[in-house]
Image (tube, rainbow, N blue to C red):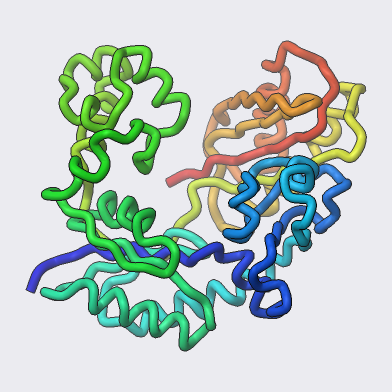
Length: 340
């Protein structure tokens, strides 16, 4: 029996859950975000595959989504509905003979011992569908990274295996930001060093990268490009690394005294969340989105880990003071990074 890691990822989860209660919308472009009114400010939480064909994806403004896809149906976010559906999905996964590591509402890793991981993957798909009427994709790998990347090849509703033997053949010529863990900023920095593809990064000198981007990050990036990662799946409860709140304003805030007030309001909610999780914050990050749509962040560490609203507010306001521009603001956010 061989050890395999499976990554289960629900297909267009939020949109799919909405379609269960609105089956008449199947086949139509559906966008979920804000209160469902695309004339108001807000961002897309998720979009159906039909909407994605028009360039609609999570994170873009609802108004942009409406311009790109005028025929789309816009729905309000219903967090409780998605949480209930997620609970059913995870309950179905825990019925499988495997170690299950939940990593979000709609995805999890499973460790299985089998000589036929595809059969295990199809069994998981059947269990989830029977329990929820929802589809999922399953990636199979020799470690978590490979399983996670394999899921992209499996979508929608498929099964795909990615191993050390096939890693570079499938991913080598792709840009570095295709890898789980590499964002656009890191990819741009690597490109400036003459490293544009996964293959080039896999062949890079770890020590040279360590000197350029840090002693830990440099070698880690090379390992990532080589498809090397931990295969350990743990059943320990998922622990959030942060908690955040944000507000989009229908009218730009031009008075920065009002901006400071709104940051304090957000801090109050974040501090409640930190307390509810029975955790302590160690760092606070403030996000400011200027009009029309330029987003910047600044963070400040707390002097000591704390769940106290005043300590979190002090760090948040210090982070806010780091913003040099006092241009009109359309969105504010506060994120508390939590103690391990």
